[in-house]
Length: 286
Image (cartoon, rainbow, N blue to C red):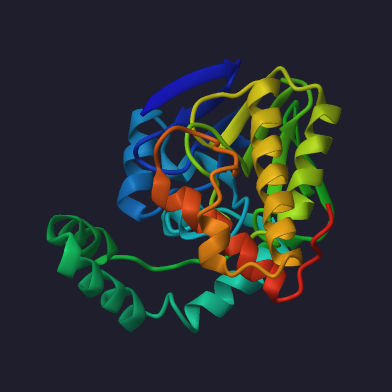
């Protein structure tokens, strides 16, 4: 974990091994927190490291509903802001895979292959209370907190609810999981054509600093590399489907682009996810 002051009062917490990156923005009205990690105990460690008290936080932003961005919400008494679909997706998950018994079953399944990690999850989930956003927006939201302006824009793509956070004075963009650096992106909930399009729009910010959802601070070259990987993989999967190739034959094609070295399981999973999405009728043409 690394705490980087990317602008006066703006801290990016970079967590390449631990999970999603987090943001802290200090304003005259209080501190803004961008995403809240996977568990309350994880988020508390980040608050301690950044010398931030939960009571001093005036606003929490959830950039999307995935648990590594939202499960630390319970630490905060302030407004929690997210896109309306984020709240809807979290509510639906609470009735399904986030039910206490479902979480317990997930941990017990993990214990079969990785008992040590399962025990860690068991301890972290012991006091978990999943808290939903209590303020929502649709397309765009802005607020002036003291002299700091914060702008939220809904992009979708990685998930249907994904939002980026822009600090125009600092020219800092918290891009959330629109950007993964040093690891393959997670695609299970993604609209890949929309993702390719969204990455192409990020240059409009002319940001000085871009904080990805996962991995170190990134540059234009990283964004272009991710865009090329997604586009190239999508197009090649579409070609295989157009030729009537089965999934196994598609996976065996060595021509698929690689985004990072290694990580073969996620590399193959992403090809499979794209194949299955196209089979279900998602548009094939970018």
